[in-house]
Length: 71
Image 1 (cartoon, rainbow, N blue to C red):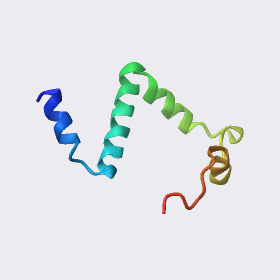
Image 2: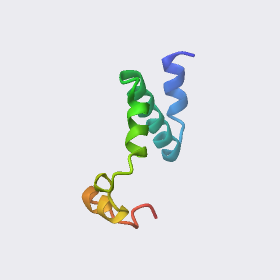
Image 3: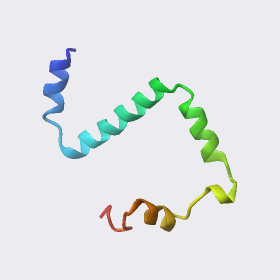
Image 4: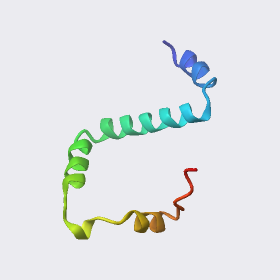
């Protein structure tokens, strides 16, 4: 399939599908540029050190998002 054919197909997608594909492409790019990224992320997620974790409320505050932003 050519890049042009892919571009033409993507142009017909709705916003939700575009966002999903953008997330997939960003993750794929990260894995290709940094093959050890999944292992490092797994180690970070598995780290149970209390000082390294935020509550959901603190994360929302730091990111400047409200709990209702997904509605």
